[in-house]
Length: 132
Length: 129
Ligand code: HEM
Image (cartoon, rainbow over all chains, first blue to last red; front, side, top):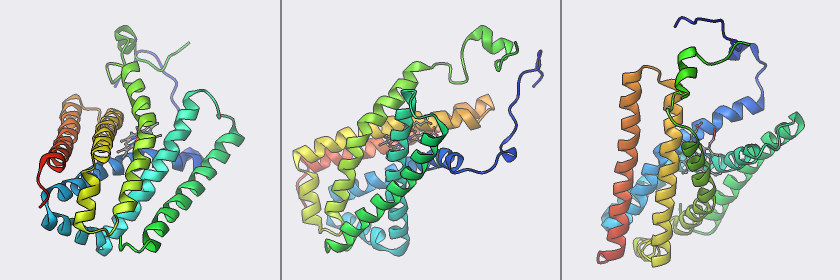
Protein backbone atom coordinates (compact mmCIF):
# COMPACT_ATOMS: atom_id res chain seq x y z
CA UNK A 1 0.00 0.00 0.00
CA UNK A 2 1.29 3.49 -0.80
CA UNK A 3 1.07 6.12 1.82
CA UNK A 4 0.77 9.79 1.10
CA UNK A 5 2.60 10.75 4.28
CA UNK A 6 5.06 8.74 6.31
CA UNK A 7 3.20 7.26 9.22
CA UNK A 8 4.90 6.21 12.43
CA UNK A 9 5.60 2.51 12.40
CA UNK A 10 6.26 0.37 15.42
CA UNK A 11 9.17 -2.09 15.35
CA UNK A 12 8.10 -5.69 14.92
CA UNK A 13 7.88 -8.36 17.60
CA UNK A 14 11.39 -9.78 17.27
CA UNK A 15 13.09 -6.69 18.68
CA UNK A 16 11.47 -7.16 22.08
CA UNK A 17 12.73 -9.37 24.88
CA UNK A 18 10.18 -12.14 25.39
CA UNK A 19 8.12 -11.55 28.50
CA UNK A 20 5.37 -13.29 30.40
CA UNK A 21 2.98 -10.42 29.76
CA UNK A 22 3.28 -10.72 25.99
CA UNK A 23 2.92 -14.49 26.14
CA UNK A 24 -0.28 -14.06 28.17
CA UNK A 25 -1.61 -11.50 25.72
CA UNK A 26 -1.50 -13.99 22.85
CA UNK A 27 -2.59 -16.84 25.14
CA UNK A 28 -5.82 -14.97 25.91
CA UNK A 29 -6.53 -15.00 22.18
CA UNK A 30 -5.47 -18.64 21.77
CA UNK A 31 -7.62 -19.81 24.69
CA UNK A 32 -10.55 -17.78 23.32
CA UNK A 33 -10.17 -19.50 19.95
CA UNK A 34 -9.85 -22.94 21.53
CA UNK A 35 -12.96 -22.34 23.62
CA UNK A 36 -14.76 -21.20 20.48
CA UNK A 37 -14.42 -24.71 19.05
CA UNK A 38 -14.82 -26.21 22.52
CA UNK A 39 -18.36 -24.79 22.58
CA UNK A 40 -19.28 -27.54 20.10
CA UNK A 41 -18.08 -30.17 22.60
CA UNK A 42 -20.17 -28.59 25.31
CA UNK A 43 -23.25 -28.74 23.11
CA UNK A 44 -22.43 -32.31 22.09
CA UNK A 45 -22.52 -33.29 25.78
CA UNK A 46 -25.97 -31.77 26.42
CA UNK A 47 -27.20 -32.98 23.01
CA UNK A 48 -26.12 -36.55 23.78
CA UNK A 49 -27.95 -36.46 27.11
CA UNK A 50 -31.07 -35.27 25.30
CA UNK A 51 -30.87 -37.95 22.60
CA UNK A 52 -30.80 -40.98 24.87
CA UNK A 53 -28.66 -43.60 26.64
CA UNK A 54 -26.80 -44.76 23.54
CA UNK A 55 -25.78 -41.29 22.41
CA UNK A 56 -24.74 -40.50 25.97
CA UNK A 57 -22.68 -43.70 26.22
CA UNK A 58 -20.88 -42.75 23.00
CA UNK A 59 -20.08 -39.31 24.38
CA UNK A 60 -18.86 -40.77 27.66
CA UNK A 61 -16.58 -43.32 26.03
CA UNK A 62 -14.96 -40.62 23.91
CA UNK A 63 -14.64 -38.36 26.97
CA UNK A 64 -13.08 -41.16 29.02
CA UNK A 65 -10.54 -42.14 26.33
CA UNK A 66 -6.98 -40.86 26.66
CA UNK A 67 -7.26 -38.26 23.88
CA UNK A 68 -10.64 -37.28 25.31
CA UNK A 69 -9.17 -36.75 28.76
CA UNK A 70 -6.27 -34.72 27.38
CA UNK A 71 -8.69 -32.51 25.46
CA UNK A 72 -10.97 -32.09 28.47
CA UNK A 73 -8.01 -31.19 30.68
CA UNK A 74 -6.86 -28.61 28.14
CA UNK A 75 -10.44 -27.34 27.85
CA UNK A 76 -10.65 -26.90 31.62
CA UNK A 77 -7.41 -24.96 31.81
CA UNK A 78 -8.27 -22.81 28.77
CA UNK A 79 -11.65 -21.98 30.30
CA UNK A 80 -10.27 -21.11 33.73
CA UNK A 81 -7.33 -19.18 32.33
CA UNK A 82 -9.45 -17.23 29.86
CA UNK A 83 -11.90 -16.35 32.63
CA UNK A 84 -9.12 -15.05 34.88
CA UNK A 85 -7.39 -13.31 31.96
CA UNK A 86 -10.76 -11.81 31.07
CA UNK A 87 -11.17 -10.43 34.60
CA UNK A 88 -7.72 -8.86 34.19
CA UNK A 89 -8.89 -7.25 30.94
CA UNK A 90 -11.97 -5.91 32.69
CA UNK A 91 -9.79 -4.33 35.39
CA UNK A 92 -7.64 -2.73 32.68
CA UNK A 93 -10.81 -1.46 30.99
CA UNK A 94 -11.40 0.72 34.05
CA UNK A 95 -7.98 2.29 33.49
CA UNK A 96 -6.45 0.62 36.53
CA UNK A 97 -3.48 -1.70 36.93
CA UNK A 98 -1.24 -0.51 34.13
CA UNK A 99 1.92 0.22 36.09
CA UNK A 100 4.69 -2.28 35.43
CA UNK A 101 4.78 -3.78 38.92
CA UNK A 102 1.05 -4.45 38.95
CA UNK A 103 1.02 -5.77 35.39
CA UNK A 104 3.80 -8.23 36.18
CA UNK A 105 2.17 -9.29 39.44
CA UNK A 106 -1.22 -9.84 37.80
CA UNK A 107 0.45 -11.90 35.06
CA UNK A 108 2.13 -14.27 37.52
CA UNK A 109 -0.94 -14.47 39.70
CA UNK A 110 -3.20 -15.34 36.76
CA UNK A 111 -1.00 -18.25 35.70
CA UNK A 112 -0.67 -19.57 39.24
CA UNK A 113 -4.41 -19.25 39.83
CA UNK A 114 -5.48 -20.90 36.57
CA UNK A 115 -3.12 -23.85 37.05
CA UNK A 116 -4.14 -24.31 40.70
CA UNK A 117 -7.87 -24.06 40.03
CA UNK A 118 -7.63 -26.49 37.10
CA UNK A 119 -5.80 -29.04 39.26
CA UNK A 120 -8.33 -28.60 42.06
CA UNK A 121 -11.24 -29.17 39.67
CA UNK A 122 -9.66 -32.39 38.38
CA UNK A 123 -8.76 -33.53 41.86
CA UNK A 124 -12.39 -33.06 42.93
CA UNK A 125 -13.57 -35.13 39.96
CA UNK A 126 -11.00 -37.89 40.51
CA UNK A 127 -11.48 -38.16 44.26
CA UNK A 128 -15.24 -37.87 44.26
CA UNK A 129 -15.27 -41.35 42.82
CA UNK A 130 -16.70 -40.59 39.41
CA UNK A 131 -14.49 -41.84 36.61
CA UNK A 132 -14.38 -38.61 34.63
CA UNK B 1 2.02 15.59 13.36
CA UNK B 2 1.67 12.40 11.43
CA UNK B 3 -1.08 9.98 12.28
CA UNK B 4 -1.53 6.22 12.38
CA UNK B 5 -4.55 6.54 10.13
CA UNK B 6 -4.69 6.82 6.36
CA UNK B 7 -6.27 9.95 4.88
CA UNK B 8 -9.12 7.84 3.51
CA UNK B 9 -9.64 6.20 6.85
CA UNK B 10 -9.77 9.61 8.49
CA UNK B 11 -12.37 10.86 6.05
CA UNK B 12 -14.56 7.83 6.58
CA UNK B 13 -14.09 7.93 10.32
CA UNK B 14 -14.40 4.16 10.55
CA UNK B 15 -11.97 1.40 11.43
CA UNK B 16 -11.79 -2.02 9.83
CA UNK B 17 -14.84 -3.16 11.77
CA UNK B 18 -17.08 -0.36 10.36
CA UNK B 19 -18.54 0.12 13.80
CA UNK B 20 -17.21 0.45 17.26
CA UNK B 21 -18.61 0.94 20.70
CA UNK B 22 -21.62 -1.38 20.42
CA UNK B 23 -19.35 -4.30 19.66
CA UNK B 24 -16.97 -3.32 22.45
CA UNK B 25 -19.77 -3.07 25.00
CA UNK B 26 -21.38 -6.34 24.03
CA UNK B 27 -18.02 -8.08 24.32
CA UNK B 28 -17.61 -6.72 27.88
CA UNK B 29 -21.23 -7.29 28.92
CA UNK B 30 -21.13 -10.91 27.75
CA UNK B 31 -17.75 -11.36 29.45
CA UNK B 32 -19.15 -10.19 32.79
CA UNK B 33 -22.32 -12.26 32.42
CA UNK B 34 -20.11 -15.17 31.39
CA UNK B 35 -18.32 -15.34 34.74
CA UNK B 36 -21.14 -16.85 36.83
CA UNK B 37 -22.38 -18.86 33.85
CA UNK B 38 -18.98 -20.49 33.24
CA UNK B 39 -18.69 -21.23 36.97
CA UNK B 40 -22.13 -22.88 36.72
CA UNK B 41 -21.00 -24.99 33.74
CA UNK B 42 -17.88 -26.14 35.61
CA UNK B 43 -20.03 -27.05 38.63
CA UNK B 44 -22.41 -28.99 36.38
CA UNK B 45 -19.63 -30.86 34.58
CA UNK B 46 -17.85 -31.76 37.82
CA UNK B 47 -21.15 -32.98 39.24
CA UNK B 48 -21.93 -35.20 36.27
CA UNK B 49 -18.44 -36.46 35.46
CA UNK B 50 -18.78 -40.23 35.25
CA UNK B 51 -22.42 -40.19 36.31
CA UNK B 52 -24.79 -42.61 34.60
CA UNK B 53 -27.32 -41.59 31.99
CA UNK B 54 -30.35 -41.42 34.29
CA UNK B 55 -28.57 -39.11 36.74
CA UNK B 56 -27.23 -36.86 33.99
CA UNK B 57 -30.57 -36.72 32.22
CA UNK B 58 -32.57 -35.88 35.33
CA UNK B 59 -30.19 -33.14 36.49
CA UNK B 60 -29.92 -31.59 33.01
CA UNK B 61 -33.68 -31.54 32.60
CA UNK B 62 -34.31 -29.91 35.97
CA UNK B 63 -36.01 -26.62 35.02
CA UNK B 64 -33.50 -24.43 36.83
CA UNK B 65 -30.57 -26.21 35.22
CA UNK B 66 -32.10 -26.15 31.73
CA UNK B 67 -32.91 -22.44 31.99
CA UNK B 68 -29.43 -21.49 33.20
CA UNK B 69 -27.97 -23.69 30.44
CA UNK B 70 -30.03 -21.76 27.89
CA UNK B 71 -28.71 -18.49 29.30
CA UNK B 72 -25.15 -19.83 29.28
CA UNK B 73 -25.29 -20.90 25.65
CA UNK B 74 -26.85 -17.62 24.59
CA UNK B 75 -24.28 -15.46 26.36
CA UNK B 76 -21.25 -17.58 25.50
CA UNK B 77 -22.15 -17.96 21.83
CA UNK B 78 -22.69 -14.23 21.51
CA UNK B 79 -19.39 -13.51 23.27
CA UNK B 80 -17.38 -15.96 21.20
CA UNK B 81 -18.84 -14.79 17.89
CA UNK B 82 -17.94 -11.19 18.68
CA UNK B 83 -14.49 -12.28 19.87
CA UNK B 84 -13.80 -14.32 16.76
CA UNK B 85 -14.97 -11.41 14.62
CA UNK B 86 -12.21 -9.24 16.11
CA UNK B 87 -9.62 -11.95 15.46
CA UNK B 88 -10.75 -12.27 11.83
CA UNK B 89 -10.67 -8.51 11.34
CA UNK B 90 -7.14 -8.46 12.74
CA UNK B 91 -5.71 -11.16 10.49
CA UNK B 92 -7.78 -11.38 7.30
CA UNK B 93 -7.17 -8.32 5.15
CA UNK B 94 -8.46 -9.32 1.72
CA UNK B 95 -12.00 -7.93 1.66
CA UNK B 96 -13.61 -10.89 -0.13
CA UNK B 97 -11.96 -13.44 2.13
CA UNK B 98 -12.82 -11.42 5.18
CA UNK B 99 -16.48 -11.48 4.19
CA UNK B 100 -16.44 -15.25 3.68
CA UNK B 101 -14.67 -15.98 6.96
CA UNK B 102 -16.97 -13.61 8.87
CA UNK B 103 -19.95 -15.47 7.40
CA UNK B 104 -18.39 -18.79 8.41
CA UNK B 105 -18.06 -17.40 11.93
CA UNK B 106 -21.79 -16.67 12.04
CA UNK B 107 -22.71 -20.02 10.47
CA UNK B 108 -20.62 -21.95 13.01
CA UNK B 109 -22.15 -20.03 15.90
CA UNK B 110 -25.73 -20.45 14.69
CA UNK B 111 -25.29 -24.16 13.97
CA UNK B 112 -23.90 -24.77 17.46
CA UNK B 113 -26.72 -22.61 18.83
CA UNK B 114 -29.38 -24.55 16.93
CA UNK B 115 -27.96 -27.80 18.29
CA UNK B 116 -28.12 -26.39 21.81
CA UNK B 117 -31.68 -25.16 21.29
CA UNK B 118 -32.85 -28.56 20.05
CA UNK B 119 -31.09 -30.38 22.90
CA UNK B 120 -32.63 -28.13 25.55
CA UNK B 121 -36.11 -28.43 24.01
CA UNK B 122 -35.80 -32.20 23.90
CA UNK B 123 -34.55 -32.33 27.49
CA UNK B 124 -37.58 -30.34 28.53
CA UNK B 125 -40.36 -31.81 26.41
CA UNK B 126 -39.03 -35.21 25.33
CA UNK B 127 -39.82 -38.37 27.23
CA UNK B 128 -36.90 -39.87 29.12
CA UNK B 129 -35.70 -42.92 27.20
C1 HEM C 1 -16.62 -20.72 26.78
C2 HEM C 1 -16.58 -19.46 27.07
C3 HEM C 1 -15.82 -18.40 26.28
C4 HEM C 1 -15.46 -18.36 24.96
C5 HEM C 1 -15.76 -19.40 23.87
C6 HEM C 1 -14.72 -17.13 24.76
C7 HEM C 1 -14.19 -16.70 23.55
C8 HEM C 1 -13.51 -15.52 23.34
C9 HEM C 1 -12.90 -15.11 22.11
C10 HEM C 1 -12.88 -15.91 20.82
C11 HEM C 1 -12.35 -13.89 22.32
C12 HEM C 1 -11.57 -13.03 21.33
C13 HEM C 1 -10.10 -13.05 21.71
C14 HEM C 1 -9.30 -11.90 21.18
O1 HEM C 1 -9.86 -10.93 20.62
O2 HEM C 1 -8.08 -11.95 21.32
C15 HEM C 1 -12.64 -13.49 23.67
C16 HEM C 1 -12.27 -12.27 24.25
C17 HEM C 1 -12.55 -11.91 25.53
N1 HEM C 1 -13.08 -12.72 26.52
FE1 HEM C 1 -13.85 -14.57 26.22
N2 HEM C 1 -14.66 -16.43 25.95
C18 HEM C 1 -15.32 -17.17 26.90
C19 HEM C 1 -15.51 -16.86 28.22
C20 HEM C 1 -15.11 -15.67 28.81
C21 HEM C 1 -15.36 -15.33 30.19
C22 HEM C 1 -16.09 -16.19 31.23
C23 HEM C 1 -14.84 -14.11 30.38
C24 HEM C 1 -14.92 -13.39 31.71
C25 HEM C 1 -14.14 -12.53 32.19
C26 HEM C 1 -14.26 -13.65 29.11
C27 HEM C 1 -13.65 -12.42 28.88
C28 HEM C 1 -13.17 -11.97 27.68
C29 HEM C 1 -12.71 -10.62 27.43
C30 HEM C 1 -12.66 -9.46 28.42
C31 HEM C 1 -12.32 -10.58 26.07
C32 HEM C 1 -11.76 -9.39 25.31
C33 HEM C 1 -10.29 -9.38 25.35
C34 HEM C 1 -9.68 -8.29 24.52
O3 HEM C 1 -10.25 -7.22 24.39
O4 HEM C 1 -8.58 -8.53 23.98
N3 HEM C 1 -14.45 -14.64 28.18
N4 HEM C 1 -13.34 -14.52 24.29
